[in-house]
Amino acid sequence: MDKMTVAVLGTGTMGEPIARNLLRAGIGVRAWNRTRAKAEPLIEHGAVVCDEPGETAAGADVVLTMLYDGDTVEQVIGGVLPAMEENAVWAQMSTVGAPAADRLAALAEARDVPFVDCPVLGTRKPAEDGALVVLASGHRDERVERVFAAIGSRTMWVGEGTEASRLKLVANSWVLALTAAIGEAVALSQAFGIDPRLFLEAIKGGLMDTPYAQLKGDAIIKGELPPSFRTAAAAKDAGLVAEAGRAAGANPRVAEAVREQLLRAVELGHGEEDMAAVYYAARPTE
Image (cartoon, rainbow, N blue to C red; front, side, top):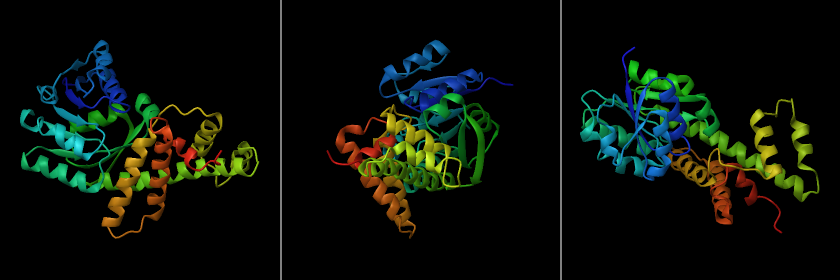
């Protein structure tokens, strides 16, 4: 199989393990991160770390963006698109919402750059394990398939435009609401003077149970919330769900309420903890 190189723009919580799995699969990586120190550990695994985003595109078959939001992607990619190799593909993996995904696709089209909208389902642990679910729409070829196989357990192709970003919003609406509901159930248990582990035991093994509820519920009860996905980022994503839902004519009141709870948890000082810290917005006031 021909040697392939991927430019990875953004080596934070998700981008760093994604880059590692590309390297493990024998794919070359040229990496950039706004804070260079977060990208430098990749050097010992064989990556080339660049000082400027545009440098990463040199010799890259695929440019992969995994950045915080649509505005950041748009700002960074502006200096990358002109530097991309002829026929190189842009794989836009950041969670940016619907309007931003459309804008980014239009930027690629204006430059005649093949574009694949490909946000992922999963947090840091699935990213480390190469077990992400890739939601993909747009340009499809062997190169992006190789990238997706290296970082994920499966890929769902869902359209020819930016449908993948819309499906990601739907999935996020569910997981964010579930996380907030778990946190509130634990908080209610405590307010009622009930051991919250009884709640987890009551639902265990039944139709209401999910492995996610047991995992996050246990973490909340133990007060152990290292970030798989930060509360501040979850609040951003809940806002994207609400914004796109309203624009499409839906009434995403649950997403709006969850966003308010997440923002409250951020105000309380839990923005850098796992999004299960939304619990703190619901717990009894001391």
